[in-house]
Image 1 (cartoon, rainbow, N blue to C red):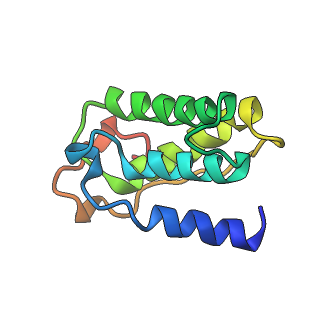
Image 2: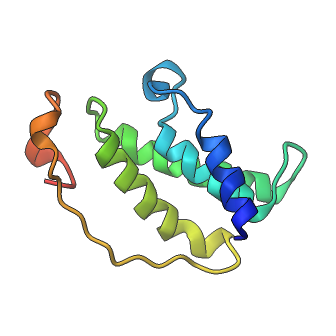
Image 3: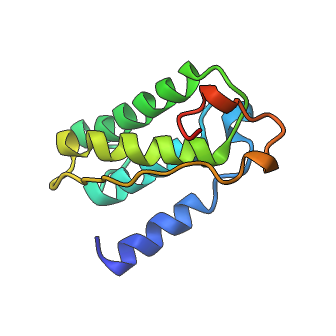
Length: 122
């Protein structure tokens, strides 16, 4: 990605309001991965296969988030979105994105709705 493409992705992502997970039915972290795929693949609303690639990735992420059956945790869902976005990158992007990054929660005390041991970051 070029610097201008990164700025474009940040600009697009900054327009997603908080609460989209409940109010719009799509977690902003998942949509952010979709924005990244769209910028990398240079998609538009008129794109064919490439447009579907981004939607497939976002829908896969949203399915994983929904399967948690839990209240929001932006940290958990951002991590899940990044990992899943990397997992699926080899299928759709010109170069797969590999991550070995592992993370554990340091914010449990800040989230009254924390799901504790059911969380992948616990």
